[in-house]
Amino acid sequence: MLGIVKAKGAVLTDEEGKEYIDAIASWYTAMYGHCHPVITKAVSEQMKKLDQVVFSGFTHQPAIELSESLMSVLPYNQQKLFFSDNGSTATEIGIKMALQYFHNLGEKRNVMLAFEEGFHGDTFGAMSVSGLSAYNGPFEEHFIRVERIPVPNDDNVEEVLESVEKRLKKKDIAGFIYEPLVQGAAAMKMHRPEHLCRILRLMKLEGVITIADEVMTGFGKTGTCFASEQVTVKPEIICLSKALTAGLLPMAITSCSKKVYDAFYDDAVHKGFFHGHTYTANPLACTAALAALELFRSDEMQGNIKRIIRRHKEFDCRIKDHPRVASTRQTGVIYAIDLTLNTDRYGSLRDRLYSYFMDQGIFLRPLGNTIYLLPPYVISDTELDRVYRAIEGCLELDL
Ligand SMILES: *Cc1c(COP(=O)(O)O)cnc(C)c1O
Image 1: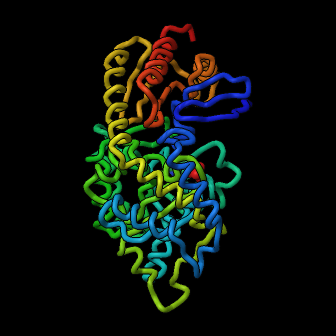
Image 2 (image 1 turned 30 degrees about the vertical axis):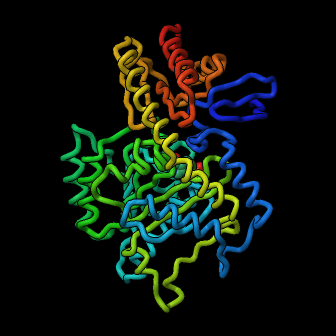
Image 3 (image 1 turned 90 degrees about the horizontal axis):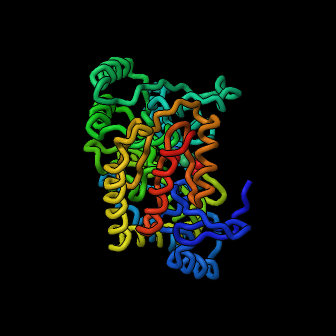
């Protein structure tokens, strides 16, 4: 365990004063840089006015302003927002919405579809729809009903579409949850928007509630504000967290279309959506999120995103033919390299890579033989150069 005492911009400082470039933005949260003065100032001012209040029967300015601001950037079909407090609850809520949608309509549909190797969080519903993992063993017999489909690629897409189409004919599928374009926990596995779009079109035809888990991809990582912008068929539900509050406080939002909302809007109380956490729409978290969105939309941040995309591309040209590099991939500011070394996912190669980068003052979390970058947008060119040089150095190591 390493004690971290300070974080500023793209840099973490440990208790001995050693600095590390945070090349994964502390799990994709601190995208505008740690302790950004715009965020900390807004929140410290809010803190003196209203810290916390029950979000039932009450509302407040930060929640209202955040909702309006978020609605203006979400895909056009998203009409209503539901607050909670982390990525797992955001997807849990999406799953519950899909299941209750059909319950309210009096239609018996109780199976969820999900991509193989997906990750949607650690609560029961979220765990159920995530890919099979060694960590889920003790709980599997309690999972909700879920079936997994392969992620489409150029080789299997026709086959996948055919089997999905056949499976949907049984009319028992309530929802389909997916990470659009990039599967984070699957070591940044990427798929093409065209393939995903064809799957979503089939789902839509059969009335399946589609849930885009944008907890990782949201707020610019894929080059657009949301990955769903690059896919023609829009989801019914979108899950957001991680960068939503710029890494300052935990919060999540699940948005939905009018179609979903209408199935819950009824005088009969039992048709309502009952899910509420104590800290729902905490005013400080809403303030952080509102300030974060403003930063995201600034010319400076948009310029940074374009710069990182271009720099990753240049770096890719430099290293992709190296004998140690099996393959590379990039979507937006997310860049991943598979090394030509075999290892198990969390095996010792991963540990050796991790230690090598930490020694170089670079915080990265390699997964198996994959090294990936998802740097904060404020990372400077000099800092990026240091990260790239460390990666080039690791290709020459005797691992
Ligand atoms: C991180 C993550 C989650 C879970 O979020 P937590 O805040 O850790 O509960 C869910 N889905 C995706 C795609 C994620 O990356």
